[in-house]
Length: 361
Image (cartoon, rainbow, N blue to C red; front, side, top):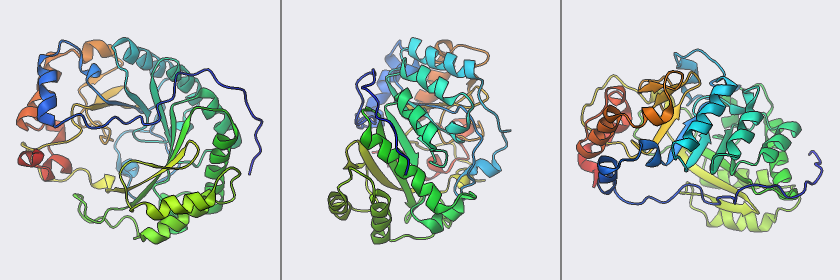
């Protein structure tokens, strides 16, 4: 394990310990604000996903990267910074996720972009698969001071790690995650660290979920316990107690050490998001509450839209404030939320296909 020099307190806006806000009501109760508000749609959104790159060093079985039709590219650094500034100027004050497709730490200027974001956005969450958590990268991430560093393991043991297609050894991968945890515990940083573990979805809306082998709750608890073992400042007895009390999977997160939490969630097979079945009436619980910006500047309606099927504009051509004030976009969103009219780009998605409009209540 690396040893890091302790750093003085960092100047940073107060950390948001629970950055995902609670559900404020049913979709039917939210739709009038969209219809009647003179504000742009960004002011109603809860999440914006900024894809700074769609390059990735993993080839996870559930991930659609291998079947994506988009060429790999890094977002231009100045474009990324301009988008962050535009989000702020347009009144967006909720979660800015460095996430969609790809591994953000592969962008050559990721720390410059991240530092720019933390000075302008109130809630910055950096996602990583954890493979690039070298000593220098760990220090640079915490120095940039995002609100949260989210390590999406999506694997729970050596067997599932083999499905990432990585040439890295499991032991090295785990060691890097432990180094990030150790840094968090031994430095004065407000950045929270969360480890997100994915498990096979037992009762999924996605067909043929055969992408992960089954891992029992007891085995998963043991694997997480091993992850926390041997780290200075971790009370392993308390970790064991908290894990034993947690029902696997669980909603939200469990803090297992100071500022370090774990979430365990069932995940569907992202590669099977789109089907040949077309649906014109349906429901999506996330629609209108989030937007994505792909590495090529395309704006999409969903953070799962890995190929830009729901593209409604491009940030290379128009400013965000103008885009999100367009009446045509507002009408499309309101139509889906209030009447279940599925936009063309969403009609082959399994979510509105399975979640029929009558199931909203």
